[in-house]
Image (cartoon, rainbow, N blue to C red):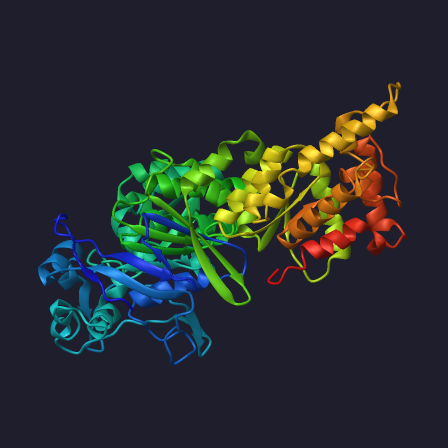
Length: 583
């Protein structure tokens, strides 16, 4: 654990926060923004990183079901903004009021962070990781923090006692339990649990109301009258009259309204995430997969709400698998595209090596600003282990099906960018995000050196040897056309790139094309040697200018045909393309 830094003298009010995290095997330095989003494919460590952050803020408690703290895998270091004096801590967080003596005579901080549940004698219980002191809690757990420099052991001792008042965790396994209600300890309760803290600040859930009405056609409030000592969420179509009534009158008929626990998982999860992210008063909030149980539109709206309404001086760290939630965060930019309130960290894992890369929100907004890319599935690629960029919808259908049928032991997401001109932009976007990226393009990429050159540069293919190749091909095609004379069926220069691509070319040029294709394949780019897509199944299926008819027959051939597809050149090319180590 990296020892924390002292409070910035320019800020008269102290705020506990994470100054820096060292993430991944590449040890990326991350300074969390107001919102930090972790994205990537499955099993790259997003949820694990959240749990490791929680563990460090809590001083490294033992995990549920074990006798040992969580070992660092994703988080290689963390530092905090620490107070310079006890008075700063007291002024900002009212520490002395939040320390209470329990029935066992021990002093504990009156704040709770979810670290998991366990079953003991058929009773579900929460894991309580707070350190207790029998007498001098201030001398035992807090004063050591002001011995400069702060040692790691002193910081750990302080966080084991007080860390739970700084961090809240909403995991996928326990968030739905919020709907069942929780213990309420009265007006002096500083937040022993999420619902207790929320009831103290906004029992009518005024801020939440308009959003769940719009998204779920439901309304919700918190009440403590029905079950006595338990704060419970209740649901109705509209609680406007309840909010206007006195507490005595309002509480007298709460049995008429159903508990939130009787509602669907989407509404239950939305309420729990909203309360944790936007109504909990702790400075650090960790949320795992907030989009769980939500429809795409609701996930997008939740992303917007969190970014638009996140509390000042809070740090929300979110793990997500949802392109819709991420798009909501991006669309809700409160200012310029380079606003510093949002950080996006992409995690990837190859051969058990985890890498973390920071993505710039403005780069993502630039991609989304392109009408063609915005309406493609380009953002989905950020959540895939690898992507393959293709030109059109027909290419996507064809290559995805052929890939599934013939390439074993590999996984990739095919992304259609609707245009050859956009392949370069998509490849550049994915490479910046450290997403393993492949590309498939028609032979006519060789008709434009500028476009070809940019792709060769992105895939680190040597360009010097092939600089003259496009001009050479064009001149030889033109000589062939000139020699054929004028006929009604005369092929155009553009048509030469579509099929029978070697016709009229010299042996030297053909050899150079083969070298280019071979080197490009080794660097994750496939140039279709036979021309455009409609040539790839020859001789099993002849070339056709009717693309819609050809693609329908081609897909049927791949799915139901009895021919041996492994003999096709395109299948050999695909296997070579994805044969790169680490795929």
